[in-house]
Image (tube, rainbow, N blue to C red; front, side, top):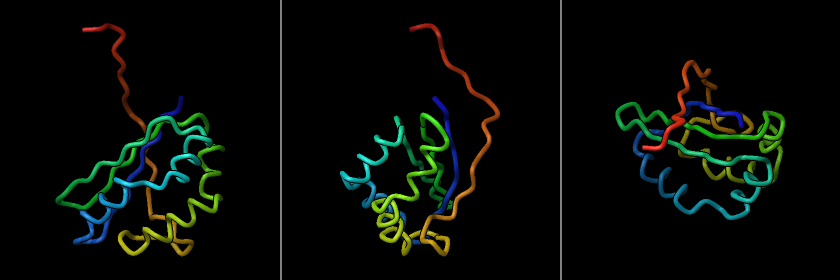
Length: 109
């Protein structure tokens, strides 16, 4: 399993709307994520900077990248573009992060 992390941001005053839209993620989008090997996906908000930290566990990079070519993903991006900085293709502006440390406990407490 590959751990991915990246940062995005949300426009000022749109934090609650961003969270609201993610509380009821479209079932067809959830299905695409699962079909493309995404096992866990979390997004965290830093309230002061409006920065979004996203973390996902994926099966492989190629399958992850192919999500962006699905109709439902492009539809989601169009739906979200008004509340966050976006690229010309409506995809969110994001910066991938490089993992510099990971620890997993091998012992149950």
